Image (tube, rainbow, N blue to C red; front, side, top):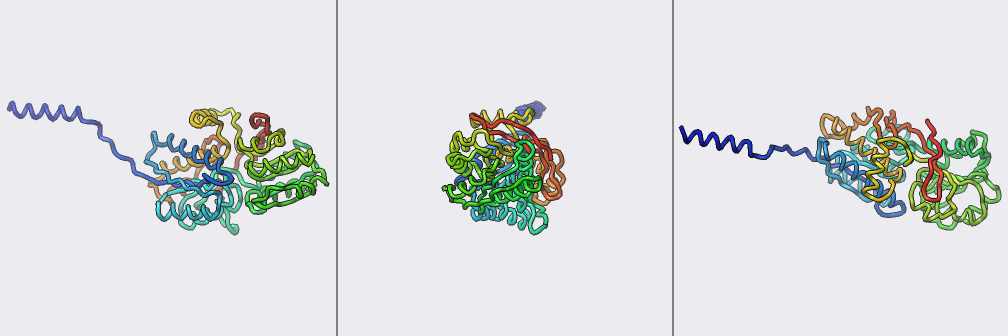
Amino acid sequence: MKKALIVALLLISALFSAPPVSFAKETVKVGVITPLMGDVKTYGESTKNCFLMALEQYSKNGRYTIVPVIADDRNDPTEGTNAALKLITQDKVVAIIGPLTSKVAIPVSETANKYKIPMITGTATNLKVTISDGKRKPFVFRTCYTDNFQGSIAANFALKDLKARSAAVLYDVSNDYSKGLAEFFRSTFIKGGGTVTAYESYQKDDVDFSALITKLAMKKPEVIYLPDYYNKVGLISKQIREKGLKGTLLGGDGWDSPELAKIAGNSIIGSYYTNHYSADRKDSVTQAFIKKYKEKHGMVPDALGALAYDATGILFKTLDAAKSPNPEEIVKGLAGLKNYKGVTGNISFDKSGDVVKSVVILKVGNEKSQYVTTIEP
């Protein structure tokens, strides 16, 4: 009897001294495709940083253990497509965040849709990303607005706010993003009663724009629309001012980089561009995100990183709500997303997988871009 009592006491002691039982979470792989080298690598770095911030946040209470598989597309369509094939067929990811630019996102979206893997790009604005030959790609979504909307907003801002009646357009003919914005700006500006005095294109690797700028100078446009990324815009704006053109420079979200002012110098000061959010936005979610990013990386995040943060947050929320972590269930959740409170605003997907959001107009200042106004759709 005494022996049985001792055994019982030992069992009770072992029970209360044992560490709590923990159940391992199921592991899920998520792919990220973004340029970490090449001409827009700063965007790729901010996208990666913001994805990892969202992952860190999710890992505290999320339903799954997420294993990220990050691929560098070098802003090249072939590299992006190869990366997508590897992520899908070898790494077995359940979803992809990215790619960043439209020229890479368009072919990657075809691959993702073919293999029925959900893809959410934060930043690819060309219409062909979610639509092909008039048909919806059901596995593809985005958290940014489209080129037709952004280009049209810029044209209306030039007409109504800048009171411009003439405009010139310079764009990269090899870049779907640049071409799309240029086309929608031109059509809207003309429809609104303005005159497009020059509509000139260049190639991706061009660095001398003097001949094109000479053509523009003859017409003396009040506004010069430059729908390209910061590196090319910086070069063009310097050459425009060197030629003595005084028209107001205007562009799109591709301008949003601290590198723009470094390249362009004073030539870009006072110019305007459309964007997805302003760091000055008085919103608790936005300000908490900016504070955390600055603590980690010592700078204010650009809009492209903010959009990637929202895209990742949407994916994780949908993943947790799905019956199981398989692509078909995830797509069902994404298609029904309504009013997700992101750092770039409230996000719902329409029937095309696109979002309808407000546009922010920013003015390039000496030290940072300044908020001008918000234009609702």
